[in-house]
Length: 258
Image (cartoon, rainbow, N blue to C red; front, top):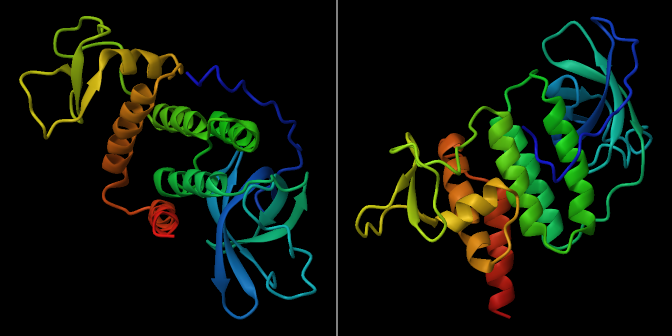
């Protein structure tokens, strides 16, 4: 089930879809140079999922793609071709780019990296696309971007089938109790904490319940939820480092040293 924090976005789609000419609402996740004047653009499309497209001539000053193929800009795109790597035919900017700055920019790029690395190509994730669309808007407006991030991470795990049972002790089958301490086992889920094992990921029952209800309120709950979700995501990333984390740490260390 997707979070009630962000209701589903209904987008009307064009019915003019063929095998050689597809259309969809989409966001750019990342782009890189290709040959002399083109780009390979990593796309997250509503009904077609994640895919890579060639934007021919996109680096030319006269290209119609100038200023359009940027992250956080809602697009309507068309693409096709017979080769495995499809060609972007057209990209229409549906609204102005979101005004993200500071930590909000890093957070947005972090979401993009998670989608790029955890979603398989060409698998539709319509609910997740709608969730992502609304959460970008929340990043622009919310006073607590940590909460926006935590709830998106949780919904992402659920969408991919990695959802965790936060309110049930899977060892005994009993409900998680506020005030009790638990640990998270990657194979078994939430378990009661036995002894004082400093190597285990300890988390309070209050945090588990609050995270399940998308109602994190205290600094302790937010910190424990961050550690829990980061541990689970890192497990599924299989050791792949995230550049946004490295950049954010460099920025933070630079600020502390000046």
